[in-house]
Length: 236
Image (cartoon, rainbow, N blue to C red; front, side, top):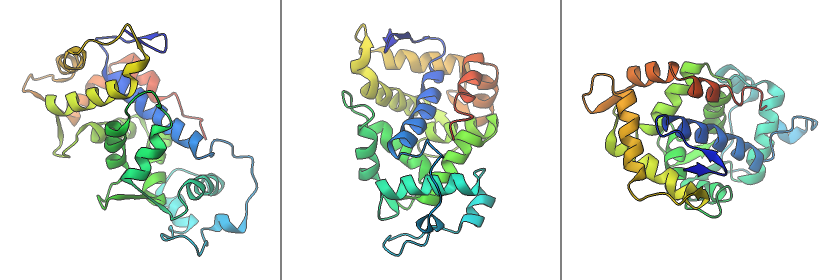
């Protein structure tokens, strides 16, 4: 089976989810108009807009908390506030933004999973601080930082391990999102088969769950995953 002409490796399907995570971040940056850093500064970029409902923390504090420079944070905020004038994004807004990337598929479930990963304080909204904190890990974090973030995305109930049920939900959401782009058409049992392949490779002690230690060890030994972790090192 292939997506947009590229073959999927049935033995390395965990790579698909990780690449989709990184590609999703890139698409989000593009949608927000924040790939280009060439624009000049402005008074608005100092985070002093009186019209927003949520006022982000100061630049200096965000610089300390993330791996972005002052100018990068200004550009990120400009794009964020253009798309989200209130200063926060709720789940429905996030789904609407995300649906633009996959108009022929249903991205709503995967968007929910991604939203929950950005919404670290679980208050039902993603603030600018949440957004740049997640992006800082995905784009500027170490390999372990990025893999930990991906693991948190897959660990849907946040109990510290990935079950087959959770991974099946993830795979089904990926197929819902990408299914109409596949050729030949995917078989109904394909997501479950990919989950079995995932666990065969990742579940080292065969106890039916994948821990963070197993996930990190397996990913670090996979050349495709290691390459995917470095795809967007210089995006912004």
